Every structure is written in structure tokens, then in C-alpha cells.
Amino acid sequence: MSEEQPQLGPAMSALNPQQQDFVRRYVAAGGENATGVAQAAGYSPSNPRAAAVTAHRLLKNEKILLAIKEISVGMLSADLPKFTAALKAVALDPNHRDHVKVLIWMHQTLGISPITKAEIRQQIEVTTTFDREKALAELQQIERDFGVRLLPRSPREDEEFVRDLVDEI
Image (cartoon, rainbow, N blue to C red; front, side, top):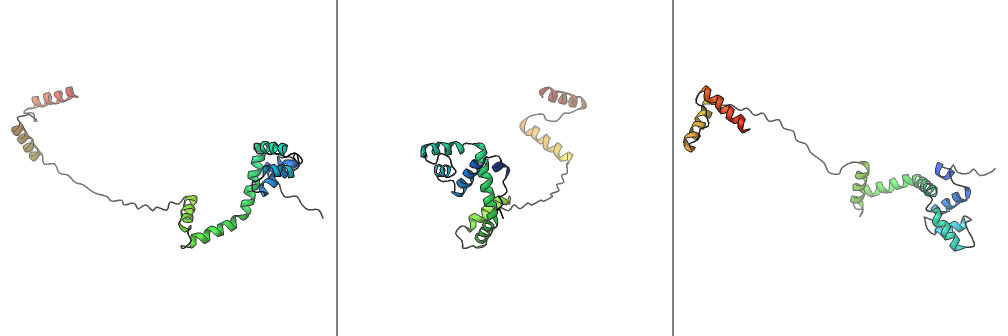
């Protein structure tokens, strides 16, 4: 029975077999020794300088970079349950040195603010009464004290007073 090839994602499918081999080996090597990885993938196996140049070019190639990301995300996704369990263990252990850091990170990642906000709404009703006679008496007192004229004395003076105010505006 023949061994089935792993399902390739779109980024890996866009590469030729030698490029795919380079990407798999590069990710497996943890992104280290690109020259050695290029040689192992069949790029200039007997010439380290040429392999170094090829490795540099491959790592500048957008298709290669997308495939590296695709493979890396796939590898991390497979381990997400382990990572989640490890984070949960730290979050639930108040004695762990990174307990608070993990809690803050988890809250930020989930979009939950660790700061609580309290809102207080209060309705205030204000009732004012206007005592016309008292207000007129106060204005008249101000007129006497400061020698100014604030109040009109007749309907004609009312019109002049309003006209003067409008002219000033």
C-alpha cells in the first residue's frame, strides 16, 4: 500500500516539489540554517556559497514566505489544545510567577477589559420660582447703589431699551 501524501494548502500547492521540500525542511529546522536546508533540498549541494545565495533568494520569494506561514500555522494549530491547557494551568495557579501576565493577556486577547466600570445615573429635578417683584426690587437697588439705569420707566423707554440692545449686538 502506498503512503498518502499530506494534503497541501494553496500556498504549498503553488510551489514546485523542490521549493516544497525547502519549505518543509526550513520549518522543521525552526527557521535556522537556511543554507544547509537549501542544500538538503537539492539546491547547489556541493557549493555552500551558491546554496547561501539561493536560500537568501528563496526567503525573499513571496510564494515561499506564504508557504512557510501556511505550514507554521498548521503546525501550531495542531498543538493549540496543548497551548490552551498550559495557559489555563497558569491562569488558574495564583502562585505561578506569570499568573497575572497570563490573565491580562487572556483578557486583552478576548477583548475583555480587566478594569470594571460602574455607571451611576441619577435624575435630579430642579424647580425654580421667579418672584418678579423681588427681582425688580433687586434691580432697582442696584440702580440706586451704582447710579445706573437698568430698567425702562415707560413703554416708550422699553422700545428704546430694546432698540439699544439690538444695536449693540
